[in-house]
Image (cartoon, rainbow, N blue to C red; front, side, top):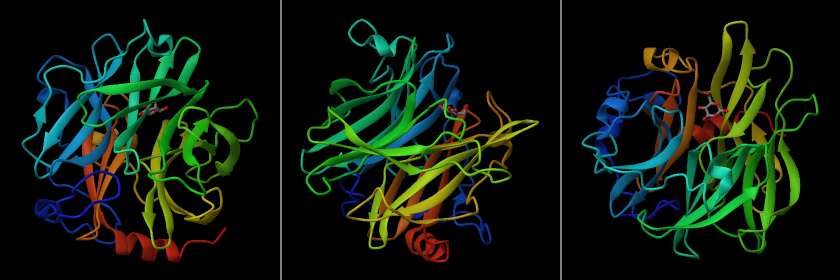
Length: 334
Ligand code: BMA
């Protein structure tokens, strides 16, 4: 048993290394993909996707965006011992929109990211509240994924794709998020700090969408929560390219300075994962892979990346931290 810095007690999961050889790829799709879909849900839903991920009580917990047949999303929990099979799925939402008390949740809650905060003994759950005024970043904390303490919206619209760092940095909590502005230079990732998780300020532009032909030229947004590594904070982000056939959502890597995470140390020019499997190409929104959760087992070096595929189902890809950091060392310094 080891702690993974993002949840409690990360067990090594033998099965996840039994993937097909996927050659030179950093992240290998699990042969059992999609590992979860609407057909697995104990009640009728349209789709299950974009899950946050953590370890709790020796099990993998996915906090899943569940879209019902009205189009509104809530969050459901799925637990598994190996993180791949035999999911135990809650028979009711564990976090449902509460628009009476939180009007910003009128049209649902979406795309959670989970960060274990050791100092407070809670997970910070950042998610999108879909309000009549656009998407906002909402925050809740939980000790057990049964009860949640809601903080309400912590960033105004239009903003989403937020995650909190697992510890204070220079005395402040830090959050990465993705506001949208009308400035015509792309939709970019920002970083902000807070004394109390509730009031956020000191906003800084962290990473910009690139231009022209680049895979991440349309917009970018953080994937799962930042992971602390000896080389810096590892972040994974989605990048969108508009094409005549629609949007393509791919995944890239960057490394932030450990003490000054508003400084990007490295950012890779190439994407590391792109929609290619049939369940990523076909679905409600084809051509989308959208990771919101990963689990890093510090004992084995394995990374399990959980992602939404085509806004319809959930895929798992596995990687090795050593290979990811080696790859980043060869990416351009910023
Ligand atoms: C983003 C979010 C995600 C979704 C993605 C692709 O803006 O809404 O929830 O997976 O678009 O449709």
